[in-house]
Image 1 (cartoon, helix red, strand yellow):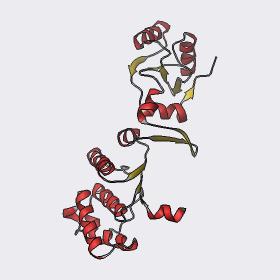
Image 2 (tube, rainbow, N blue to C red):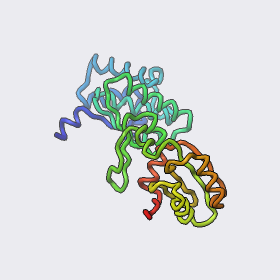
Image 3 (cartoon, helix red, strand yellow):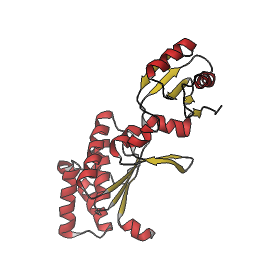
Image 4 (cartoon, rainbow, N blue to C red):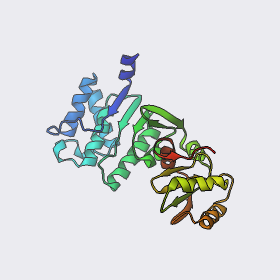
Length: 242
């Protein structure tokens, strides 16, 4: 039921849709009216949202005077003025400096915990997905190729990875590790970097074998991240089965 879904959902687009010639308050009032929220209910909700997104003292200033982070906060308030049950955020932190980005992520996390609200975030920053999400869906070529909690996705690569940079054929280096039984079938390469989920070996033993074989210019051990999962599923070249 598309119409029913639209009534309970709202979107913060990647591009701003607020009118910069109007004040923040006027923008929120306009969007409230579009949703049929008027009078005292609208005024109260706008005040509450201004406080929620940290713009209470800026609501009566023209949006043209807002910083990029302040405009993004106003966009979130605009999307919440209809009191939705589902909020879509499309690349919410693109173009923001690190401090403003961190503050906006704090706001999103707070909305997630304090309101009865389901939030769906599309992002290329997987650290954001890991921080904000109960479940992460990874898409490739228009299809979902993985869907699980961040913890389970990371665990699919084991507790520890070995990563090496090679001066030569990364695929050949990976094949050598597989022939020694060190690399799992889901090891992959991206350029000159080989990422190796360990096949029951300790990272110490794996690194010793890599040095013995003379395979790498640099080698290190670390825990898996969602970036590794994304590259394995969408951008890495997987090792071929023997």
